[in-house]
Image (cartoon, rainbow, N blue to C red; front, side, top):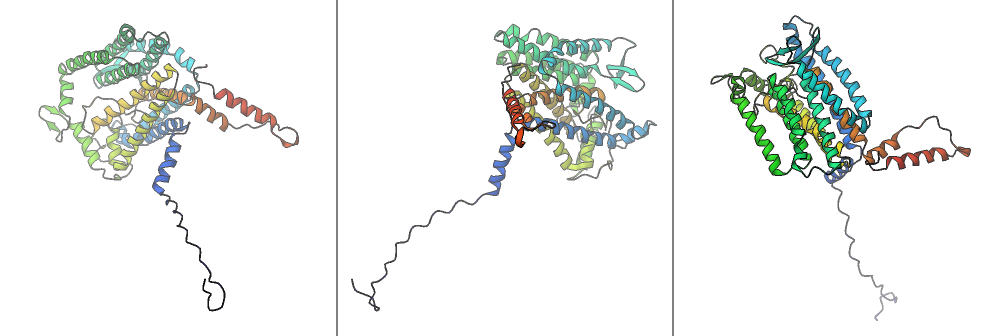
Length: 451
């Protein structure tokens, strides 16, 4: 090998190694998606969605009731906060019912099914007794409690059908009777038709539609065959068509779908059209809280059935989308609770409550948007009306109790419970405390079927 000029052997350079592949850059969007998915799959997600979503809807509803009802109260020579104070009192009572329902064991909920059904039927019969029942806006569905307080028993019929229907189907499933169509329908459908008949005697078709939706939701969750499901749906649809055709008022409401002028042929679409006007004038962020123009006598029922229109006018598209997002989160959480439980009663009751709230919200918002006929049903947890708020908040308490009762959720809640006042072992060790924690985790990890 020839030497270098200095007489030293040439230095041989090592072959270059191929460069190691660089790790892929961390995509912030993907990282955010992974974190959101992990948070979405946590055991307590449904619990927090139901609790937080329902409270936000109720609080925002109180604000909008106060804003939308001031002019109506002043027109009736009442204080501007009259309707707000009544709604706030109903929300306090409903909050107590929600807390009580969320702490009740499942066995107690099942035990209350028959008393609530009997009480609802009794009150709905009393509505038709002269001198006891009273008519409001043409519907004989109210009982006066004295003074300005009234109760609408048909609202409690929704809760009664959910609890009683869930308990009935769960017991039949435990006995493996649901494979027979007679046990699938009887006595669920006859009792539901009894409730529907008592409601329709007063002329309240909107509540009857919600009750029908609950019935079909229970049948769907019970696994009713397609032919059986279609048969019941056909019968209910035929009865609905007859009831609509024989009522000029209902035909007029049907003619107002998509109306853009107050007079749509022979129908007076004043309420439907001014609801659209309120939504259209709100823009992106609205005219400001309390600055609605339509509530000054132009929009009937601004604080009850059409409170969503006032929300769109004062809070704009951002406000209405927020309300829709809260209802969507509440519906998703209810479906998640119904899908993850092993208890058949919990599955049917959670599915029934979710069907009730989402169907009523869709019907109310669809009517305000001009996509559905005006059915006269309030927006759950949002519109003015104590009779609608109390059973709805009790139903939300049911969902919270069911969400807490999931095995993983119980374990997570047990680990987060504070443990104060317990003495540590010798030398500062926490032996007894650690043993109690392990015992709680073991008891919380049992399956939901071990009650």
